[in-house]
Amino acid sequence: MEIEASDEAFATQVHPVVIAHPNTGRPALYVNSVYTLRLDDVDPDADKDLLGRLVQHSTHPNLTCRLRWANGMLAIWDNRAVQHLAINDYAGQRRELFRTSVKGARPVAYS
Image (cartoon, rainbow, N blue to C red; front, top):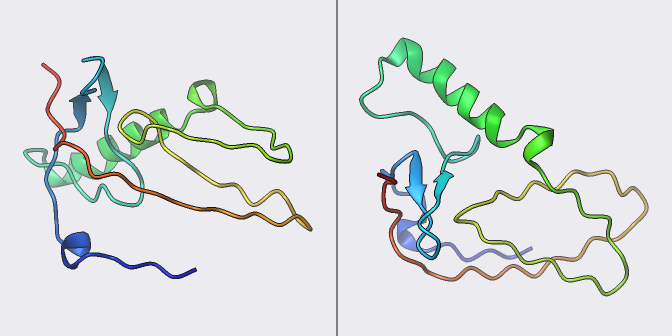
């Protein structure tokens, strides 16, 4: 797969851990195990544990949706409120993905 990353794609970004969804105003946990490296203003010893707990919470099976793919299915999700995780449990099947990202507003802290 060919990926064209922008110059700023690898720059460090700071954003709130809990954001207000821009359309609904509802709170959303805005962390993940790949891109959230640390928490500002948290003791470094507690940081790793707290971040691990937040990531674990956001991926808990009770809070996930599992799709059972069918021919011709289309899945679209809102990255401002959910996370995507592909599980390689489709041995012998072809998985084809067309990814589109839309530039959105900067995340705003939920208050």
